Length: 118
Image 1: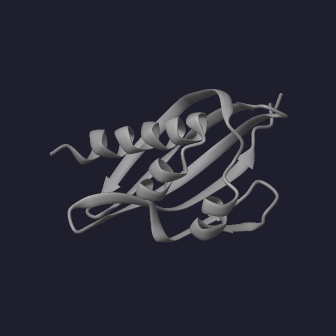
Image 2: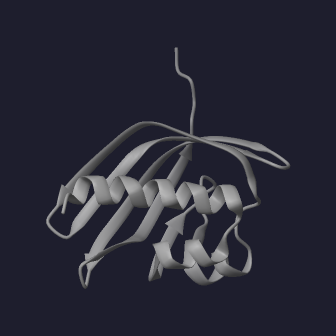
């Protein structure tokens, strides 16, 4: 199996789960011990995302993605633009995946707002 390709597919599935506001898909992607840091610095757990997932995204644009695999850990980083029903988000992301029992799962993500610097 190609771990790099598997992580990229999981990234796309994560984005699609946001696009479709699909709690079930998101639950399968995120590990039970998933922990995130939002752009405002606040922590988010899998449990809180299952109760209040992000709003349905009208569009999701993924760019500048780079995946690195280190044995049973992978890091995906890049830029993610989300057009939600009530707002637009443009942010850098760093997603961390762990391979457990032969299956990749997201264990963490940190996002920061995209700032166009001169």
